[in-house]
Image (tube, rainbow, N blue to C red; front, side, top):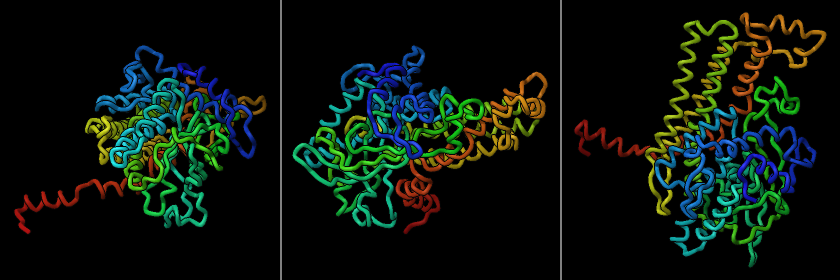
Length: 480
């Protein structure tokens, strides 16, 4: 089935019979489940926007494999311009959803595998790249949603995968057959899993001798026998079920429909296996995926920040403080922080380089800097939004109180702001701010694409400290 429209996308989810549990219960139809619909709407917006002529340059691209016009979310970067357009696309979609739209992880997994399988074949004479290109043709033609699967539960983080008391705490190969492999394990916190068609699993970290069974990259349909998904609870989860004002962003949810994806002896045919035991390439694959994913954050989080800034300004306007000098100064600071993270994404893209495979790759040091800034700037933007919005954000009455025949008149009277603005409108903008600046959204900004320490490790590796010491000695005329 070729997916062109949001309606096509939703039908593809309905047609695929997957095993998903929500709050302990098996979900009968994920396409209509009220907890999933906002996430489906967010991903669906990527299909809707791509059909608009004014977005064609950003949301579509020409395939380097077939020459056909395809979704940029299935494209392999062919230039620095492609890398920059990716970032511009993410900010555009964030403006439309004010939420995670979930297709980036699979997008980045495709690009990381394209360049890495090429180099594995170059060293070992394997056929992974050829297999991968055939799989990529299918994705580009059908345009289905692919979730990237990298993060393993990890268990005892002081031990290697092969040293774990429970070997399944890292996804592994338990059997090799003539026609494929059997895997067991799980991938945790997988953004967009419940509303995707397939998952592309990758190793979660660099591997050492003895970890060969864990060096696995493969594409798995989410309706494959043995795959079970368990939806991750989010902050204020019940509000999505209630709908209405209290949901804040009721159409598009909060973050990205994360799930724990369990593999219980899942068979994967060889044509869908793109790494199998090559431990010396695991670290490189992980680094490339992480760089590509960290590149994104100034785009999508910059776009989300634009909505937070706008909502903060509206909240101030509704309560009569927009003209105050300190409010103006806080809004300016928020804009500075948002453009700072966006400029990081553009910079790492502009400094990108061509790989052996012919695809382009962002500057890894600048991409890590971009993501590290996100872990700070988004929190500061949110803090300033809370400052501007006021304590009322945290203690607004329920939507049902506002509608109540008994107490609604009090909510209407005492929650009102400036004359000429309805109480309902004031409450709605404050709920949006609450939704976007608390709980799950902030945690994702901190830990999505890797926790801050992982970026600091990359600074140590890529920061060229020795070269900087040599430059300083040269200027100071020091001779060793």
